[in-house]
Image (cartoon, rainbow, N blue to C red):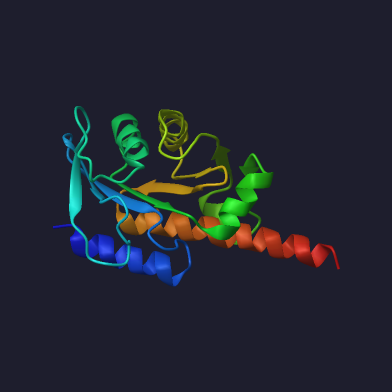
Length: 180
């Protein structure tokens, strides 16, 4: 049902170098029962079996290792889709900033502040921190790990993921040019 949409977004993430290898994950809410997510270790740009994770109860062993973040976001927010990626400039910026303030026009318009949260990948702490930010935002970066973008659709979440990388790249280029 969602498999083609997951693969299409995964291919876009790879084309923009927002993920590498089998890193990152994608999910879509299914009503109030739970959500579909890629299997652990699955490549985002290839067809793969999706795993249904209920909002309450046991989680299938094959679910992505970041299922806790997705589950907590869907429990706390009304978001319908999540893209978790590892965009290199955004990850690098998260290592030196607690809040990223885009200076490019699109970043200023759509996401004037990108919060950075802490927590080990896949941990309950990171799940709680990400979900709390996504209560009032569509984008957050887990320090040294990657972005979590949410929205009504996978396309919207993808756009915020791409925006984070673009805005962080612009900031890095600005800093480089100022040092000349």
